[in-house]
Length: 335
Image (tube, rainbow, N blue to C red; front, side):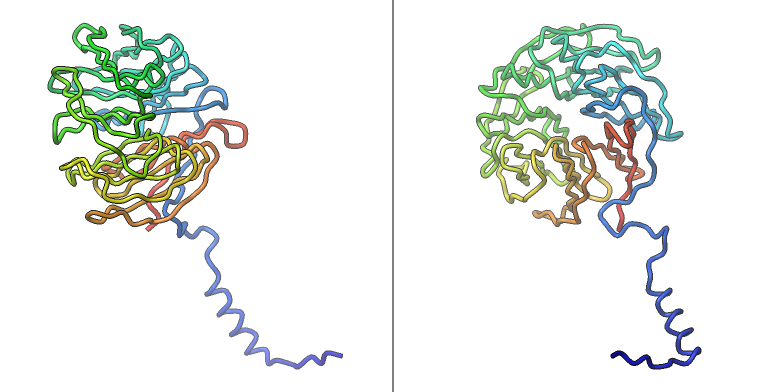
């Protein structure tokens, strides 16, 4: 039989105050790597999104709403949708080119790349054929857009003056992401089946280097730290991330990430890397010299695409279904 011992009222009051002080506030900020700022409703149906492109000069974020066949134009200042453009069948990649006043989008369903005027938001041209256009990169010196032809095992060069395909560059394997390295002036492309990163001279549209991505299987997502001369390459086949030294194109470290990594984004100001995956797990790393330090991981449904604003440090995740509706989740670093 239990015996109850009486406790003075004053002691109960003190214990209650201590318990309240120790309890977290209901609206306390997240202690994880990212905290949510807003969920902005997006138009269209609750289907898959893909790549994004941030135009800092006009405060616009372009989002490929892939399975809705739409291109979403979002104002990052007002946090509102400017336009929802139809006529982009199975749109995968998108890149804004402010110096040309154009946006390029991979309309995979038509095997072409669409050219959109930034002012009118009208499609003014289409370049092709491209078997399976995916990621895009812009080389400013020669004013050419390079397109990953993922299933065509090639990278395709488009002349921005004529909006026409001028070269198809065989890769010998599926094309992962294509990026432009302003430090070297080269285009970099991940090659799935060969587990390598290739470099292309944008002026000649020819491959000038092949570099093995050791301990990486099916490299796909690529992001760059131009100033630090580092590349980040994600292996969708073995859920790994390679840290690559761009001075000698050598893998210097490999890290675990979520299942089936897809899109990467690097915050040049805070030196934070975001690795989004098809499984919805997002890993946040902090770059520290020749190493990456894991800041943490979070999980969101369908969070396989990410972009980051290096000025505000806000991070954008288009999520295809939150309570049955697509939203743009806006987050910021939690530390």
